[in-house]
Image 1 (spheres, helix red, strand yellow):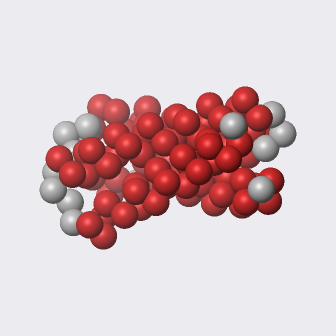
Image 2: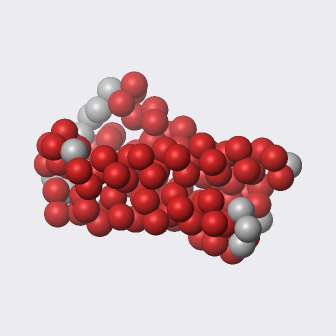
Image 3: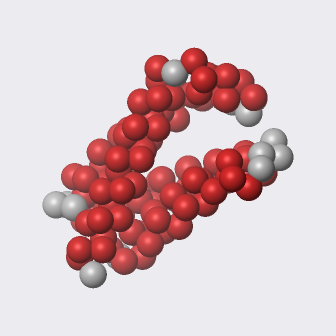
Length: 112
């Protein structure tokens, strides 16, 4: 089970580190957050994603940090799913949030 937690945490971590960085520096992501009517929260969201992504990796050595990071990212992805449904995004645009939600719930439950 430890190997599956490690692989899942690594996948999630890389995803959130990259996506969080894009939130901080990409004009396309700024436009997306405008479309969601969440522009004031873009930088905060990017910092949260990067911190939690790093927390997943550090959490492989310190289990409480893994649980907090995976739980926080699961909540964040649930919120992302709600936002995507609210703006009526197509299913293909919503799938990454769903998959990352499931991945982080798996990490949370498997590591608990």
